[in-house]
Image 1 (cartoon, rainbow, N blue to C red):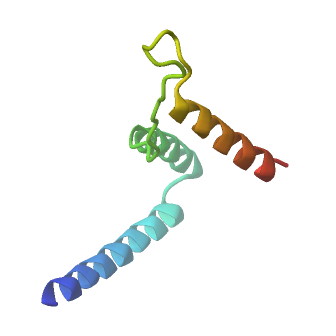
Image 2 (cartoon, rainbow, N blue to C red):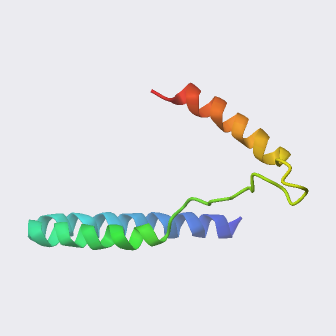
Length: 86
């Protein structure tokens, strides 16, 4: 149980330090430097893309028979995407 408490205390310290650094950066650095820093920071963040892409083949190797998994996924996504579309 002590490990969980240590984790929360480290997390709180890290968040407080990051908020202090962010505030100092916003107050004391020129706007042009802030814009260029944010541009390069966003480039770095894009490398850690949080989404996973999974592909399913439409046809199986059995005489070009349509994959059952592909058909079910297609019908599920078509129902969900049309329901949430604006």
